[in-house]
Amino acid sequence: MCGIFGYVGANQAGGDIILDALRKLEYRGYDSWGVAVGANGHIDIAKHAGRIGDAVAELPDAPIGFGHTRWATHGGVTDANAHPHLDCTGRFAVIHNGIIENFRGIKDRLLASGHQFHSETDSEVIAHLVEEAMADDPNRDLISAVREVFAQLRGLNAIIVLDNRTHQLTAVKNVSPLVLGQGTKGLYLASDALALVGHADRIHYLEDGQMARLASDGVTLWSAETGASQPPDFQPLTLTANDTSLGIYPHFMIKEIHEQPEVLRNISSHYSEPVKELAALIRESYGSFLVGSGTASYAALSGSYLFSRIARRHVNFTVGSEFKYQEHFITDRSLVIALSQSGETADVIESVLAAKQRGAKIAALVNVKGSTLDRLADFSIPLGAGPEQCVLSTKAYTAKLAILLMAAHELNGSLHVARELLWQAIDGIEQAIAPDSANLIRAIAARIVQREHAFIIGRGLSYPTALEAALKIKEVSYMHAEGFAGGELKHGVIALVEQGTPAIVFSPNDETRDDILSGAMEMRSRGALTIGVSPVNDQIFDEFIPVADAGDASPIVNVIPAQLLGYELALLRGLDPDKPRNLAKSVTVK
Ligand code: G6P
Image 1: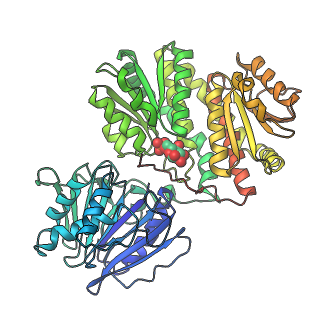
Image 2 (image 1 turned 60 degrees about the vertical axis):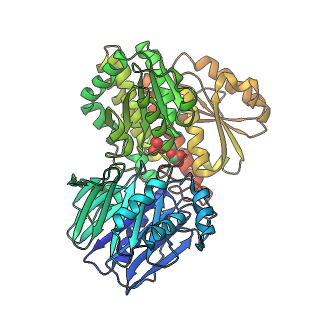
Image 3 (image 1 turned 180 degrees about the vertical axis):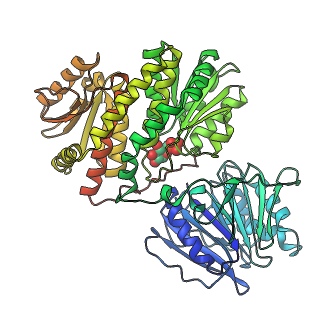
């Protein structure tokens, strides 16, 4: 949440490099953007509310600067609240990702001692705190001043300070991510390695409490705790421009939907070893807990059904933000399996940290290598899905389902069955994204696009699919879609069904079919337009979306029409599917 990018190097067009990199980070927040460069003895800033789009930052040439894309937490979406923020003297600028939990008290104290604030953000206190720390001795080493300031901030924060007198960037982080990049034209800092593609050849993930100083003479790292210097642990940047570009697709959402067969082929062919390790951890644990937020939470819930059904194992499930209210069960024999595309979701990280404190083992299914969760976990399985740049999660979701399906079968001693099911699911996805199917979904989208509500039902394995389908539709198209367990229909929600209300019905060839069709009938009798997603048509469906039967891998196939429906509804409503309002891809705040 919030993207940050810094540059120090030989290129005088620092402002352009930074603005361009911010476009790649915009999925982290797109309420406003801003760039600061240090030139001619002062700091120049361009910052605006709204998306970057084709904006050009009117800034002087400079070889040092940084930029920020904001997802607002403290203070509205205004130019003034956009980062960077300056101190009173104009010597220091600051960008920040996170929430400073104790900012109110700090700000009151700074105001009382005469500091002038220009924004409502928590972040601005950092600039004034640095100013104060340097006030007695303007030649004080900035690293020691920032170290002192950072120690005063509570929360999960990443900050970069630009000092225009000594021409350096100083950065430090706690949980919120920062990646250091080194390339032929300079040094970089970014919230995500994606933004370093085309600039850096080597990257180093900053550790929590690790400080970095970037200047024209190179980079130095220190421990914020001890002050001792630390050598960077550079590794090659393996992402390429192909990974980060749209290619033939108009949006990342549709590109990523279409990448799913490839992602699953890789998992099916190459994941036996990590899956065996995950299964062994579950087998050895005394209580396992699946944790995730948003889409990842529905993958986690699916996992609890799969482990129960296939492996006869009770694996608990909790959403990330609720875990702390149930953590009392966690002991040093527990296993927490954290699911996250970004590996940065604060609610999930917090759960993992709490479980670690209780001595639990942590396994992670995470897409972004080097992310906080990836590094916190005792055992991490990379999803290998490639960068997911649409804010909505699609390919990371089906990748998690595939790994959980394999782990459940491995526990049951039937890994080969999971592989066969996955190949059926891959064929099923290919059919679901083929032009004929896509046209059918487009036509159904056109039929329901004017409706305010849609209801989605599933039972058993299809219950989490109904929840995920509803999330996809509402996130991207702003249509109110509600997913629920088919049996719950008559306990309240049916009161909302009117003539023409779309009712999507997941009806696989399993033990839920008869009951879910009864539910569909109950909705249809009250006027609902029933849309069946099933391998087999039925006369009670007004619209029918045929899907392949992939047995227990059906949730992987069945979610595809919902992903496509959300996409088509967004297009029909004139919305940008990649950047829905109010959302951000990487939610690093609580
Ligand atoms: C945000 C996104 C969701 C995503 C959730 C969890 O809320 O808008 O699409 O599912 O974060 O993200 P994660 O990176 O942990 O999977």
